[in-house]
Image 1 (tube, helix red, strand yellow):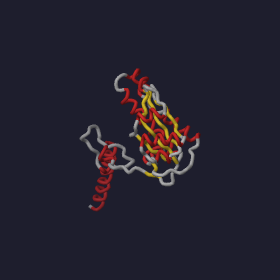
Image 2: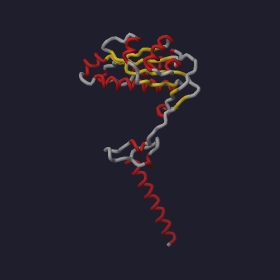
Image 3: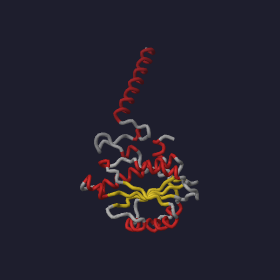
Image 4: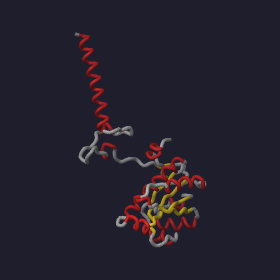
Amino acid sequence: MSAFEDIRELPSFRRAREEVIPREVMGKILEAGRHAPSPGNVQSLEFIVVEDDTKKEKLYRATDDERVEQAPTAVIVVSDIERLGRRLGEGAERQAYSESATAVQNMRVVAAEEEVASVWIGGFDENVVNEQFSVPNGKKSLSIVLFAYTDDPVYVEQRFGMNEVCFYDEYSNQINSFWDEPGWRGVREESRIQKKRARSVMGLFRRKLKQLL
């Protein structure tokens, strides 16, 4: 499966199998998160890997998501906000969320390649997580990602087509539904191709017409 297909079909789960994810596999997933693009190359992210059942119960209390207790492995993504702020100044927290989101997506893509389903939890009680997992002051818990093998993967359906969310050159220039497909190559290129095809058809029509006359 290509990376493009992995992104289009990132599996989530409602029920997890009782199967441990090998450390080698989790190592690849974490490396993907560690190599996410970082604002100013500060590389502010740190990862807390949670496998202990007692710890996962505490994580469940912070998220109120039953899948936390089912998943064999959870990862808390933490950002060193203070270090990021020293480099970037104002807006460091916003940049931290961007870095975290990119890392989460990287991890989810690599997890899918390893046939591991994943769930991204963005809404949780940060104070509970910080307290229960000893996150130091100046650092912020930004995301929680659950990883599990599942027999019933869940795939998110896209609510809008490409023609509804993509514009060319400016917001008001919405592309036509004709290009609402994975192979969309841009309005200008498609327009050029269609004009070329139209000229070819017209040329064929003229030749046939001359033969008849």
